[in-house]
Image (cartoon, rainbow, N blue to C red; front, side, top):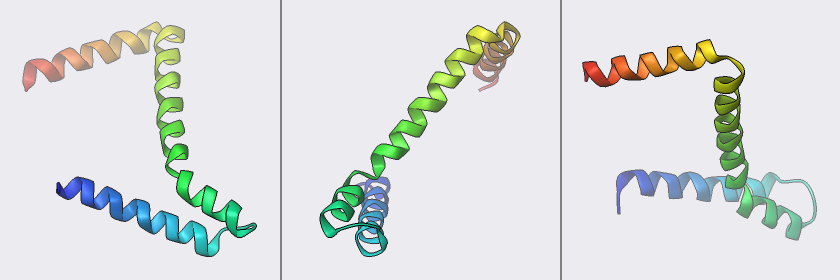
Length: 77
């Protein structure tokens, strides 16, 4: 098993255990929250991506600067 995958599984299991032990609500509710907690992380990533795309449309100067920085990074690597 890859080291990164093993670390992700360990973090997930620790998060589940914390949610079950210290969660608020009945045991069934705590179990459900503990099992779906990574959805919040994915929602955060999607929100950031949407905000980045919106900023590219709302602030064209930022979009140009981002493209130029990407081109410079690509040229220098």
